[in-house]
Amino acid sequence: MRKTMLVVEDESLIAMDLELLLERHGWRVLGPAATVDDALRLLDDELPAVALLDITLKDGTVTLVAEALRARNVPFMLASAYSRPELVGGEVLAGAPNVGKPTEERRLFAVLEQLVSRR
Amino acid sequence: MNLENLYRLVRNGHVHAQGIVDTVPDPLLVLDQNLYVESASRAFCETFKVARDETIGRHLYELGNGQWDIPELRRLLEEVIPKSTAIVEYEVEHDFPSIGRRTMLLTARRLFHPDNIARTLLLSIVDATERRKRDAEKDLLLGELRHRIKNLLAMVLAMARQTSAKDRSGEEYRDAFLNRFNALARAHDLAFSEGNEVGLHELVERTLEPYAVNPTTVVVEPGPAVAFASGQILSLSLILHELATNALKHGALSAPKGQVRVRWDVQEAIDRRLRLAWQERGGPLVEPPASPGFGTRLIEFTAARDLGGRAELNYAPAGLEVQIVAPLGPVS
Image (cartoon, rainbow over all chains, first blue to last red; front, side, top):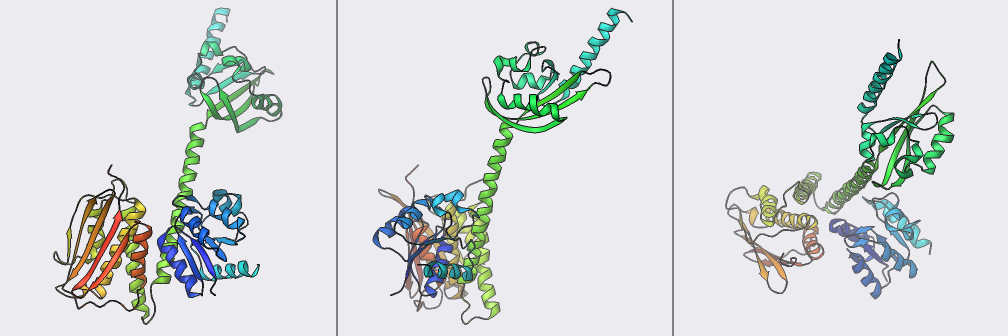
């Protein structure tokens, strides 16, 4: 079975790019969710193996999603332009790996590998 | 020199000194060594709403019902100043009864009189509350700008990565990418234009302008005025661009007599919704693509996510017909 990743990103072009990129590497994408509400609704239906989060969304910061993932023991990484995401999205983001934005393909998959193999 | 003359001279000297003190634009106090006010600048009196004659000759801590009896200031004047000649822009936050909570920058300098042992202290108090607020706002704005730039770069990266290179020469790939890049720049201009809001009519006209090689190539039949948020302007502009570039490659705009018509209306039912129709005529016979490319995906994806609606692509043999339906906010 293919592994599933939740992608949360509100900029459509970037979300599509991430989705296509992940699919090309054999992942199944849950989402991409554009809002906190969307992401939480998706999580109610299905638990992904891992998640990739943008921090500022249309309806607020991704904090609630990160907390929901933490509570369900799903590892997540960030794709953010902020150098210190926890200052924007709260303590729950501290220590989460950040693949940056713009997101380099190599870095994305290197971090993803680490995150998944750590389990 | 008699007493009368001396008095006049001293008085003149004082008037002169007061004149100098008044030219300083910042609130300034001249204190004697025991912290009694010898002189106060006009700016001091105006800023802290005190009369000069209530101020001169009083002890600093007694001024304005003791509003300057601030622990931090006391420490500065009684412990720091005696050991150093100057203190520059020491920040103190304090609640002033007359003017509320303020951030003050204190600069103090000791003056030594050459002919006696008297010491004078110059204390300037600059109200930096507004400046601090402006600085904070500027930092916030700069932060947002930096964030937006990175987002824009990420969008460019997405376009570069997703523009197909398969079965294309380097030049063809470059042209296809630059085509999208230019559309993004144009859409960004529309979405974040200075001043006046961009309406749907202007959005359609300006996005399709590069494709309107003659008056009959692209015909826009404007419907009611519709305004969008900047993010939606960007998305709609990109959608129209993808349709146009597709028409140029495979559709009506690839034929000399081909034509694209764009029109829209607004349905005023329970919820207001926009229906925008894109219709191609006079091009080659249309066949649905074997698999949707990035352009088609982008159209459907952004119509659903950014406009909260949908895009329906109908590959009719006579020409592609697209309908974009998007809910609009309630009538304002």
